[in-house]
Length: 192
Image (tube, rainbow, N blue to C red; front, side, top):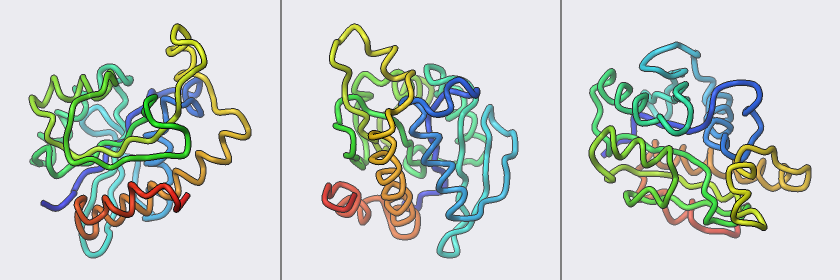
């Protein structure tokens, strides 16, 4: 099934702009630049951009509902554009992947990610592709919230900027061809 919607998860507002939890927004921002997308338009509780790639129209979205309520925006986006969950890829940060790694999956659980939990709750299925961007874990478990809401260190920024570029290439393959085709490229760790 063709991908027609890419949703990057994050939190709106300047104070969250460069935080680990906003990697999904960062990927959308780079994809917007790469595709010279039009926007943002305010639609379906999101900042929406419209682009064409390989002759296909694609919607790029950043929900403005805050991470833990991302499902409301995603539900509205799917309704607004009359899309099925399988026609969407969700991009988000993942504590369980080391910094510098990413994984494209066609479906699955939330893995404890509250933004993805919200999406699953609102749309009633786990069957949608997702691109998980590794941010690693903090040294102490109790520091998780503080960690995801903190910015990358200068050394980490160098790594994450390369990962974001690879994520854009990955998403372009998924849109132009298919998520299944893009998986081999996206899940290889030697291309960062």
